[in-house]
Image 1: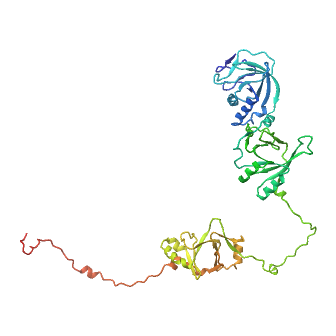
Image 2 (image 1 turned 30 degrees about the vertical axis):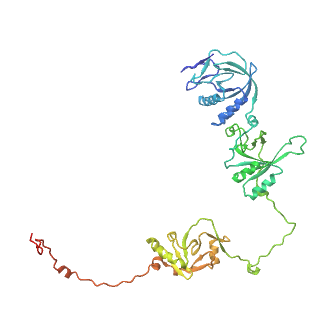
Image 3 (image 1 turned 90 degrees about the vertical axis):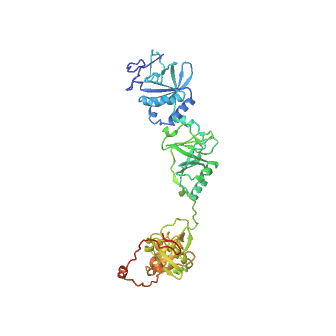
Length: 489
């Protein structure tokens, strides 16, 4: 029978069990007892979903134990490190239908719960030479150690569960391709301009009937494009994996029962690929040397074994080799729109727009009139004058129609030099028209060019002295005179 530990109790009957600073009965180690492998996997899955095993792994030991009734159970033992860790472990163990104990060597007593906040002690210690003696409020049982269970091997033997949502989000991927389809995947990545690294891995022959080792192509893709994900998931001979922990990756569309990121048991320089469809995991002891896929592009070398150097000549000796510059529509956003071209038939519209302009625009904008039309310059932007064809500034004194780009895509300075570099001209490139230049001296302020003069006539001024000296009429109120034919009031 177990006895509840009282507050401030210091002496315990269980060997190796004392009380910590909080008064909780605690040994140097903790023990979790579960009934089967399924309960063990449930415990690991629940524990790793909220916390990591990294702190417990150095002292963790998983064993198959056998009772005197020849029943086999799973026992996990680890360093207790305080009641805080034990509380977390006990909470997860209860959810996995396991039982938590604490002790030091061979005797372990049930850890505290809601019925005994400070833990339990035994009324009598069982005399047994077994590996483990567990004291519970429902039973007292001795167990013999039968064999150990390696955590890494257990994780390798667990088969992933189908999860269509896993791997849908963008992220890094490992791709394993069979030997026959690997070269096609390389060329596909090169044509699609996808950054990837490639190496070759091999395993021993599957059977004595195989001629050589099994070879596969391994691709490391930092960012898999969304358009390629369905293709690589459905193509036979290609398997896509998503990294979930250092040294471990799970096939896209499947999920490992245990959160592998919380179980750092795999080598960082190796790789374990967990496959779905009830197939075994693939273990790569050491990731092979990976090279950029662009290094494996197909190249063609001619049969010529000697090469004659070519002597340079002037371009004009070869005839017409230059190409004209053309304007092509562009989808790039507009910027630096500081000018506009107004055709002659649109000048009446400009006259009406003048009335809606602000004082700053009238003062800072300038305009030049030519036979081809008017050219309006405004360093503040011509959005306030929605007339004509907007022009963006490529460089000082060089403007091109907004929404167009020069083809070939040459530098604005090269374009300016090709047009003769006239410093006294402002050059304009309009679609379907030759380049035109307007002298800078032709531009005048908009307010001076568009506001027409008005006639006026002088008026004679009247002196104020006669007006001041004139007598002001006075109004006197009196009786109203009688009307004709009537009597007075």
